[in-house]
Image 1: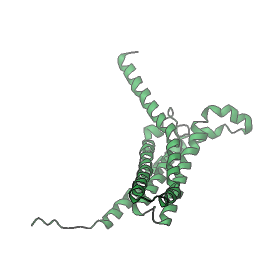
Image 2: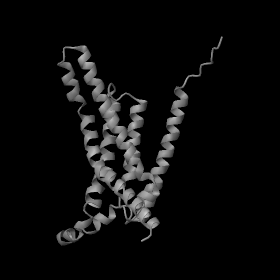
Image 3: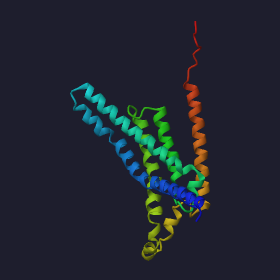
Image 4: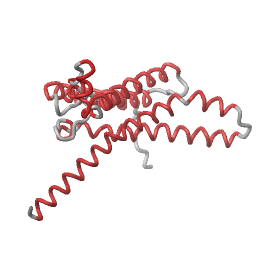
Length: 211
């Protein structure tokens, strides 16, 4: 093997390792994201027991920072599955509904942007439902598709269920993966247009006063 081939193999192997590591750690991030989001009632009850206003403000700001920061990190890592060379790769084999999970998570971020999920009960319920749906769209195919890929023989021995892992992996089922990816990208484009229109409506033009 030539030095160029060795370098290419090393770069490709590092890329595969990084992407598969992200795919494996995302269920943990999803679990922490849901836990912090639904921990809001506990945090509120704990704040009511504090007698020092400064301590309560620090506790609440720390909670909001961790909750929303983890939400943004989860979305940033989920966005990697919107790239066709990653999502459609037969070697990587990522969850088939990973782009849809990123799209629904984007909608949850949009709901938090346009509303106040901490003071408005309706917005909090919308964000909660979107987060649960997004997490299910990623965790279920990750566990029963990607992680169960080496258990095909065992599933066939139970009830001829060996086709389930292949149906939940993107690279194995391109006839379903391509429509899911295109639908997700179209959803991102439409949502981005909605955000841009909302921003233009909310922005107030003020002429510069240089005098």
